[in-house]
Each structure stands twice: as structure tokens, then as C-alpha cells.
Amino acid sequence: MPPFTLLIKPAGADCNLRCAYCFYLEKAALYPDTPHHRMSDEVLERLIGSYMATDQPQYGFGWQGGEPTLMGTAFFKRVTALQQQCGRPGALVANGLQTNGTLIDNDLAAHLAAYRFLVGVSVDGPAAYHDAYRLTAGGEATRTRVQAGIDRLRRHGVDFNVLTLVNALNGSHPETVYRHLVDQGHFYHQYIPGVAFNTVGKPLPFSIEPRPWGDFLCRLFDIWYPGDTRRVSIRLFDSILVRLVDGVANVCNMGRDCRQYFLVEHNGDVYPCDFFAEPELKLGNIMVNDWDELYASPRFRAFGACKRQWNAACGACPWLDFCAGDCPKHRYAGARDPQQLSYLCAGWKQFYAHTLPRFEQLADEIRRERAAQAAGIHRQPPTEPVGRNIPCPCGSGRKFKHCCGAMPRK
Picture 1 (tube, helix red, strand yellow):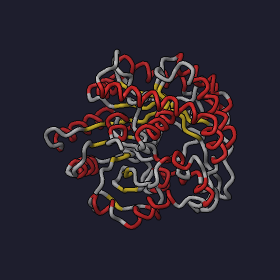
Picture 2 (tube, rainbow, N blue to C red):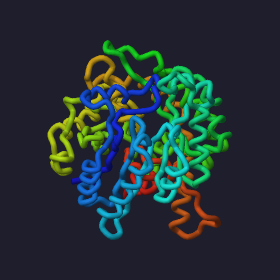
Picture 3 (cartoon, rainbow, N blue to C red):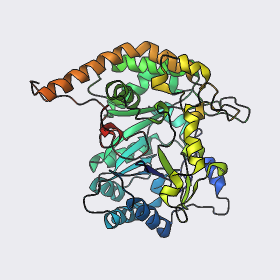
Picture 4 (spheres, rainbow, N blue to C red):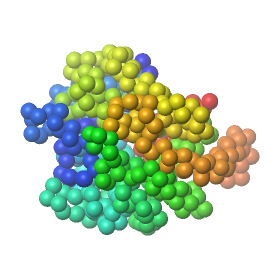
């Protein structure tokens, strides 16, 4: 069985916020008999014990939601205690936590720092953009609360990055968003397109449209390229460089198989992806099924194969090696047909046409630095490619440099 990582929803879809674009909140309907969803000690023990009994180069736990910090500090202390108890001598364990940041207190921040959790905090830019969609259940703004959580992470020395969902509002203002984040001292960025469809395949109002998505990425690159390539890590840009230099597709949408990780719900149910946590795609439950059984299941194999069932036009596209048809969720507008073109196709083409020659120049610089380092003739410490400290986009929760970025070179 190939190595795999875990994306875990310890509080299910439960959250203290009601972000207008959240795709996972509706997943609470999977478990209508329980108003609150919390992972029990029994499930947690089985989760960690069974996973750490498998043979992995590193054991990656990504804690997400909903809002995983609803579980409280005691839960994460139990997590790390079990990992120490179940891990064999010398086992490498990495934890990642994706959070809205509003519930980070000093006790939790101290524990995250002590066990070197890598934390991702959702920040959509200045308050005018962030608070347009990211509100509490009572409709209150959250940007100030998020900043308080970030300040606590910083005081305790927690490694963290910021995740920005690019939507119909902030998508028109890449310069403002980028400068705000950098001015706030954030140098590890992730930008994710916010796209969702209604039942007839029409994009929901918050969704970024294809051309604006391409414009956003092109303008973002043009801000970043002149002086920030060694200062600011942008996950997408890093992944393009990894693809060019190492031949590795280290993000889901660049890969050709959607078996990157297992999603584990609060009760132990297992799904192939959090975008596809659906009854018909449920793979099993960790209280009943072994990991090798889950990985070998025909349903998981069929799900993974959908990624490379792209539209015929993709075969002639010069950007196929970077896109691989895009994430299936962007192809499923209306009909569940993986051969539909990605909704964002035009934007991706615009972006790659605008930027790839300059990415090639950066890739050449990295190759030269590596060659000089290997030959022992560099005159100063070689600069590592940016982005090695961001959470690995495969969902493992590990830093990129310890996960897909550490894969053998071709």
C-alpha cells in the first residue's frame, strides 16, 4: 500500500462561524441524529493506533473542520499523548491544524508550539473583504477576533500561514489583499478559488468567475515576481516550481490520481476527499475497516481514476502537466461528469500563458543553485526554493519540505 496521510474532522462540520461560502457546513446533514459532533476517545484511539501501526515514512495528521479548535486544548493533548504512545521508536509525526483562528487561546497556542503543529489561519484580506463573508452565527464581524488569535500564535512561536479564499469581492483586488497580508507580517500565503454551484450548475454569487480568477493570479504574480520571490511563499507558485524542477505534482489539482489522503469524520467514517464527503462515496469506517482494505476498495480506486478522465480538449492543452484537468469539483457544474472542462479553465490558461516563461527562469535559478551546491562551489549558503514551510497541499498537515517536497527527485 502506498504511503498516505489523514485529513481529520474531529468536530465534523460544526463551527462557531457561518461563512457564506463554506462548503462543509452542510455536511452536518450526514449525521442528523446528533446535534453536536465530537470525536470520542474510542474513535481517536483507534484512529491514531491503527494509522501508526502502518508503515509510513512520516505520519501526517491534518486536523480540519468545521472548526477543529471546538474540541478544546485537552483533546489535542490527548492527540499528542496517543501519538507518543503508539509511535514506534524514531517515528516521524507531523500535525497540521486549519482554523478560523477565533478560538485560539494561550493554552492551545502553547501546546501547538510545544508539539510543533503547523497552523493555517483563514484570512481573506483586510476587514472590508474578510468580514463580507466570514461572520459569526449571529452575523458579527470576525477579522478582529482572528487577529487576536494570530497574535497569540506569534507570542508562543507557532509556525503558521494564512489561507485566503478568492471570491467575487476580494478577487478584484489582489494588490490590496497581498499588500495587507505582507504588511501584517504574513509571508506564507495560500490562495484558493472560491467556486460552488447550485443544483442546475450555476455558480453561486460569491464564486470567482474564470477570467477574474486568471486576472487575480496574473496580477498577484506581477506583484510578487519583481522582489518577493525569496521573501514570500505562495503555495501555487511554489508548486509550479516543484513541478518544473523536480517533476513532482505536489498539489491535488496538478496530479492525475485523486487518492491523496483519507478524510476521517468525527465518528470514524472514511471518505476519499472533503469535497466529496457524500453517502455514495463513503469508503467505510475505521472502527470496522483496516487501512489496506480502505485503500484497495473499488470505490476509492474509481474515485482516484476520475481525475485523469479529463475533457478531450485537455489532451492538446500546453498546460496539461500543470492542470491535469483541474480539481473534479470544478468540473462538476450541474452534471457529475469528469469529462466536463473545468469551470476555471479559461482563467488557468490565462495565468499560465502570462507567467510560465518567468517561472522557467526561476526554475533555472534553482537548478543552478542545486548544481553549485552539489559541486561545492557556491560562495554563499544556497537559497532554498520558497514555500518549504507551508502546509503540504496533499492534506497531510506536514510542512511541504517534510512531505511531497521531500519526494525523490526524478
